[in-house]
Amino acid sequence: MIRPSPQRRATLQRVVFPILVLSSLTAVILGKADQVMFESLRAYAADAIAPALDVLSRPLAATAGLAGRVHDTIAVYQQNARLRDDNEKLLHWQQTALRLSSENAELRALLKLAPEPPSSYVTARVIANSGGAFVRSVMINAGGEDGVARGQAAVTGEGLVGRVAEVGSRASRILLVTDLNSRVPVIVEGPRERAVLAGDNSARPALRYLEPSAAVQIGDRVVTSGEGGVFPPGLPVGVVAAIDHGVSRVEPYVELSNVVYLRVVDYGLAMDLPDPVRIAPRGPRHAAPAGEAARR
Image (tube, rainbow, N blue to C red):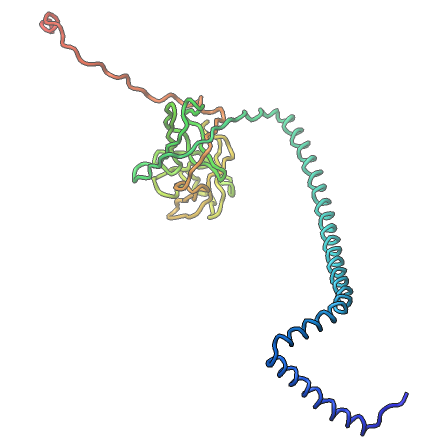
C-alpha cells in the first residue's frame, strides 16, 4: 500500500479545511435564502439516512434491552436469596413458637391454671368531652341497650382510657384515668412494684402507695395489676414520665383529649362491683288529717 508523502498530506489538509468551511457557509446561506428548499433537502437527507440509522439503532436497542434483562435477572436473584434467608428465619421462629406453645400448655396443665374468661366488647364513639377543671370524663353513644355495664374497661389500641362510671339506655359516661376519682391498681414493670394510679385532674396521674425502696425510673412501663377486680392484669396504661419530689408521674399511652372511638370491653368483672347507692324519690307531702294533727 502506497502512503502519501508528508507534503501531499499537508496539501490535502490545507485544501480540505477551506472546502469544509465553504460548504458550511453555503449551507447556511442557502438555508437563509431558501428555507423551503433547505428543509426539503434536509427531509430528503433524513429519509435517506433513516434506514441506516434504523439498522444501527437496533443493535444498540437490543444491547440496552439485554443489559436491562441482565440487571433484572441479578435483582431477582438477589431478591430470591433474601427471600430464602427470610424463609429460613421464619421457619426457625415457627419451630420456636410451636415449642414454646407446647411448653406453655404443659406448664398450664401442671399449674392447673384457670383459663382466662372470654371477653366481649362494644365499639363506641365519643360524643362529648367534659374537659373541665374538676371532671375528666367523656360520653359515648352506647349504653345498656348495647351491652355496656358499669365498671367495664374502656380502651383503645394504645392502652387503657378509663372505666364506665354511668350507664344509660343509649349513652354512657367514661371516667378517665386522669380524673380525681380514678384509682387503678397497677404494676411498674421495671422493678415489678405494685402501686395505685391516682388521677388528680392533671395530664399525668401519680403513682401512690409505692414502697419507699421502690427503684422506679423514668421510662418504666405501667400496666394494670388485676387487683381489685375491676381491670384484668396486663392492660397497658402508660410510662413513668417524671419523678418530682418523690412522686412518680405517668404519661398515659392514650392521648385522652383526642379520643374519637374507643372500645368498651366486658372482662366479666363488672358484676363484682357493688351497685351504686340509689336514693328513692320522695313523694309530695300531703296535709295530715285534722284529728292526727290534733294528736300530734
